[in-house]
Image 1 (cartoon, rainbow, N blue to C red):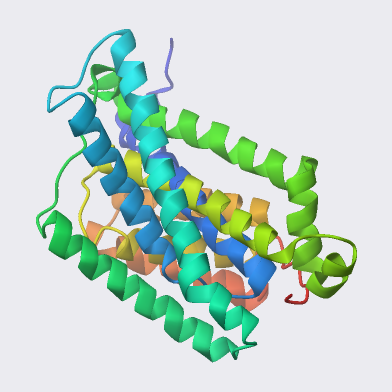
Image 2: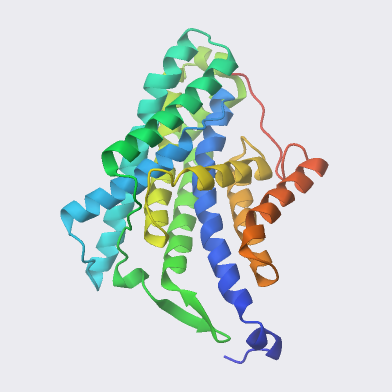
Length: 315
């Protein structure tokens, strides 16, 4: 393939954009959990970052118990990735469901004020983080990559494109399409959207509010847990791993329009690219400054985010 001279001499762009897209898709997967819960409860679930963290640990322990420290190659590598994603999603789903049943549903049934929900969310986040540190150790561990996700996939204008980045982009894209289909084209999705628009009327029309809210938490947990698995393969798994990605995913949800599913996807991808591009000119220490600065600028002109906000009443 013939490459223009500009791209050959500036091939860092290719690697930066690819890595930015991979991180952006991970932020989008986590952000969906924030935006779904906000849509039905008008609640910022700050414990969702620990749902992501538990997904990472779930994948780590499941893969090590089943296969050991040496990842397989060939067709076994694909099975390794699928098994890790399934274990991470299951751990995230169970954690999210437990949070809804233990921390939020009792408050909802007692008509607790929103401030109480916020305290409960922060408390649950700290509890899960410290529990993981106590039980799993405070030193980060790595989810071993199979050969399918190790090394470079190919080169574009002399710039390497990592296989793991390609795996993350493909898997995340498929999961985002799945989530969008569930919310917008299924009976379950109609129930979620009905509760988000007007929980009281949805209840009168026969929608089971408790079941719908629990399912919403589970759906967000499944996606967040799978993201935790891929984060562990790309970086590492630790009891503190949810903090920074969680804040960035929440930022992505706000950037795209909190409460809007496609806005969360768009916000995550934009945030991943925005924080990667400055590495071409400035130090990596400015990465977060630039990313959050873009959020401030966008909200100054569009306070509801890029795709707005879908408002509704809480059940």
